[in-house]
Length: 409
Image (cartoon, rainbow, N blue to C red; front, side, top):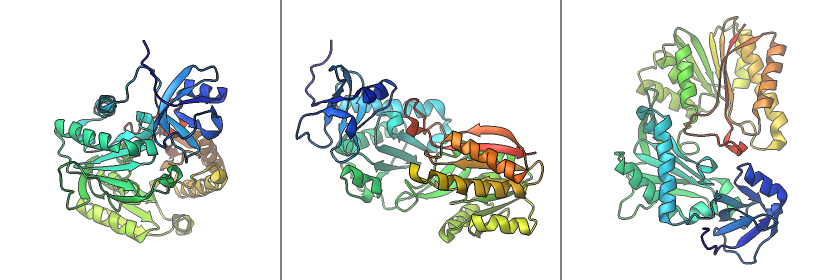
């Protein structure tokens, strides 16, 4: 027996209906064929087909092109506190099921649409939670979600001392939300004195600043890819390009590399990488250099520099479909240069974190780069983002990271 419906009803096009049946949770503004006037921003609405068949319930956003974000396709769901606590528990239990206990020290607990919390990201860095709220619907219920999540983790033995909101994101403006950052006021608790904590990932120690670090403070999605690099690095001379905080370089050094050169264009990133090397007692093996990788790789070729293993972990060269071709040209340039620099039998780790540079396009670029470099690639592994950033089939936006390990032959 279906629960009585009291939500505003939005009818949608057959195209939107088909997308929902495939599992996609978004309804775009142009896909809505009828809706009541004066619906409150951020409130729950029912989505129905052209013939009035129930398709799902989601949060309405009056400002965004994504007008409704579905949270349920079950007409019997009641969206009370118990519903949200149950969903939080499912998300946490999933992480505990797919990750080892040591990997829960730093992990993503909520990955937006993949966990049916559209527009919400929650990363756990040891005793701090770093949160981004990117949809008006999640903003409306954050006072239910965040205290409940802290209680859940504490009940499981994790001493969470605070929640930091990293809402300094331009995307919030598309939802009509203001930007800002600061401690979330947990009921009856004083905010922590410091936004800095230490995490351990793959045996490597890092200081994470949830207030000033990039995104939520630290990139967690390459956890197991870094481990794969460490496994191959023993005895190798390694060049880590776009090193940022030095994470791939540190894993290579921890894995027994003979020498690691970590490169980034940002001097502050290089300083952080140096500090992380010292923190882990790896500064004798790891050299950190400030340079533009696009300039450095041709210079190294002219100098006949010798590296056994090159790692390319660039930032997203594109964040829209309009600039994909330029991004692929950039990816090809650095991969071509790296392939030319490596000797026969050398190793290449290469990746893209841009959703718009699809796997098909990225693979085609690698084929072109290898052809132009006059080398053949023997694939060791093809990997994606770590399992705490799950890919939800039917929601292509949840799949974004491409990571390949090759031997040059």
